[in-house]
Length: 230
Image (spheres, rainbow, N blue to C red):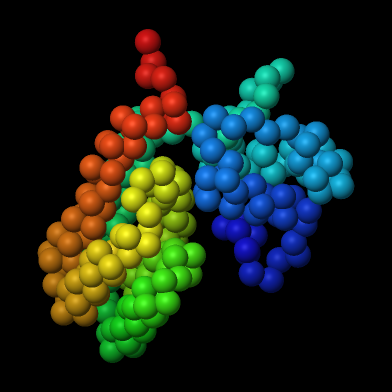
């Protein structure tokens, strides 16, 4: 289920089209700059163009599609300006989440973090890259819930997805999983110890690990990036 459709709501054709294209864009089966048409997607689903148009609009709102009148719709290219903005927003939100989580974490919260880490360890052992991706999101969601600011996860999820798409061009998640879990474990231990300062410090280190990856991708895959404004 996608981030727009909530549990218990009736799904629609728009939801199905959105989910498929959203997954294809984030997995890079549709790459930055690839062109897609309403007519082709409508034929693929056997529907009129209107639900396709609505799904395209959702994806454009997530900054994943570029819709231009009288021109082909294309998968949005990366923008270094937007990447910097996205990472700034996420870092600011994560700081507050970790500060509140460290203050609020109780025995039940600590048990939830331990279970989340155990599931991540199993994913590494089973080399379950796709499953680990879901568990990565769930770990950050758990921190938001422990912090008592569940709504913050919507922001984190949106900003994280933008960078995750970029980083799929670089080091594989399978290679990165042990390091990510080590960071998660250190964050969890700091939160359980009510050490907000340490939790934030590790959390920011966790986010900064992508700096070199992003720089390398921007140099080696420049055709996936928007040209800088003149």
